[in-house]
Image (cartoon, rainbow, N blue to C red; front, side, top):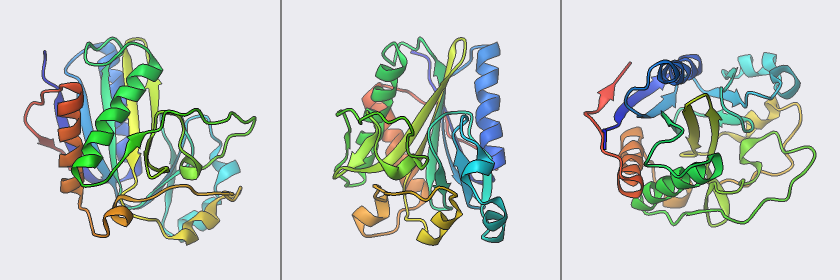
Length: 239
């Protein structure tokens, strides 16, 4: 089995993070190379929206700028995510027909969630993949962490990781936010449609201690290695 490339890019702006994920996805679409698992963080803090959401309809942009939040859209779907500087995000770029993942969007998504669960377990957190379906609504909640979607990662019934996938002709890009530290509740005042509920729990909240980028990324790497059987080439860091 060909090794995957492991990339860590801590402390990049949201724009640079999204550009890099898209560049990796588009390059793989052109010429299939090694699959990639990337871990990154956000600096400054950033609000990201799913590709189908309307930024101006969802976020008070003037107030966001005043409070130091950048705002952008992700290439993947899902809802609004507040990425504080403690968050660790993962992205995967690989072939849709990768032999390490089951065929189909939902089965591959579920398998990746199982790897994330294993990584979180290594930190000492009891987590699981939520398998019960969420009742569908005509108007889904705009905030990603309002409720866990099916096959996402929860701890004690509360969402701790939110993920979404984009598919091209032969490539999948999956991005996921690992909720490491609680965001200041004042940030939610930036929403033009206030969240009616917020059913999430952070890694640090569960553990009762601080968790750094390296500890989080290493636990996640171990989860992917053992759950999916990925072998990685040497760690590569980009600033």
